Image 1 (cartoon, rainbow, N blue to C red):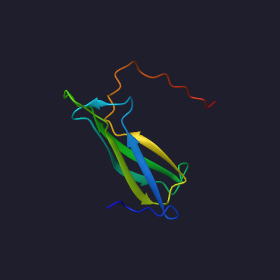
Image 2 (image 1 turned 90 degrees about the vertical axis):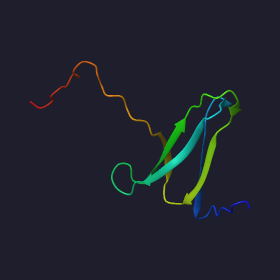
Image 3 (image 1 turned 45 degrees about the horizontal axis):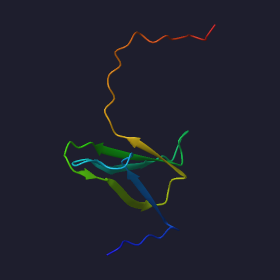
Image 4 (image 1 turned 60 degrees about the vertical axis):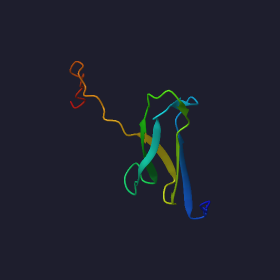
Length: 98
């Protein structure tokens, strides 16, 4: 059965892996949504996206589509990856106080 969407009260979010087809085993998933209600980012929805690049011999075109209640004015899609620790030189800091 095809899901229904009431665009007056719901938003539809979709992600797909870029550059056409991917190797078998590749996947992408909308894993979460955080809507900010205070501060500088109030009204922003942060969509958390997990992806896996496969190694199989066949090709696939991964995508993920979800619906959610309205609540954000705009959405930002974030790749949920663990950042590598910074190993460079000590950052240059400036103290602007007199």
